[in-house]
Length: 324
Ligand SMILES: NC(=O)C1=CN([C@@H]2O[C@H](COP(=O)(O)OP(=O)(O)OC[C@H]3O[C@@H](n4cnc5c(N)ncnc54)[C@H](OP(=O)(O)O)[C@@H]3O)[C@@H](O)[C@H]2O)C=CC1
Ligand SMILES: O=CC(=O)O
Image (cartoon, rainbow, N blue to C red; front, top):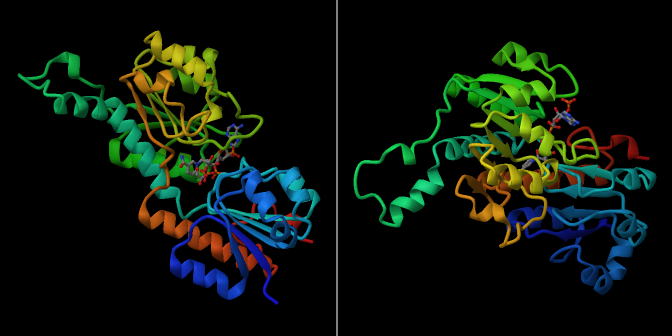
């Protein structure tokens, strides 16, 4: 008998067919309490869960006594209670690697668009304001040969460093819990304490996971340490930055700009002051959102689920020790 699986993300037809070949699939729109109630019998039976977004915690696990594998269409897994999964011997699969280069491209796009004020000046031209040669009021700041500080020198941090170092001649600083020798040998990257990185960097780029340690890692005191013409880029998770403190710093003119792909609350509220600050570039959490990469993530998630249900967790598993 095929294992029962709940799918809470729309898949392309070919990937759905691949999943259905191996599993007995029930498709739902999301993990909302309404869906949990309406499909309670399916939740009770399911051995696998595949999708993205929504909280997977002890409360949900209690409704899924047969669950063995969660497969997330994301690399970040802060929405999963990994301790609860471990206690229940449920393995968690995710999609690192396939999205790394695309997310680094997004971060570089935020670096360039904040520094050179691309969205702001695009809107200015389209509003008919370009009547004569532009002056200092429309100038930006250079990117090339500046200092880029990376918080979280993992897969995405490394791919960003590669672009910044080889493409833009930038000096690379990073803060991480351990030494990354490859970053030193390939990009001459220097590991430094958070305080030193914030004081020295022209661009501070966050590619950190959200954990208890990284929650509000960047608050008022940290923003105060940054150079007055520095730029903060966050493509890790919104709550790594204290958004109220960031808004206050931007409103007080303490930073050149901010580029944000992630927010404390997503979707960001329409009345957030961040949306009316001209020097803030906002994106709707699109780090990995290209056709090619999103397809690759879904394909990996399907294969990860099939492999893990079959007992194989060599690749892309967050907690292989949970496998009984
Ligand atoms: N905006 C978007 O669409 C996307 C966002 N993301 C986010 O990016 C994150 C990173 O992804 P990825 O690079 O693949 O993950 P990795 O695990 O490869 O990298 C994360 C890095 O952060 C370091 N780190 C963790 N905690 C701390 C800490 N307290 N202080 C300093 N460094 C720390 C890690 O360990 P160490 O310190 O040992 O080096 C590691 O080097 C994801 O978890 C996700 O939240 C990912 C994809 C898309
Ligand atoms: O935010 C996206 C992810 O893959 O994590």
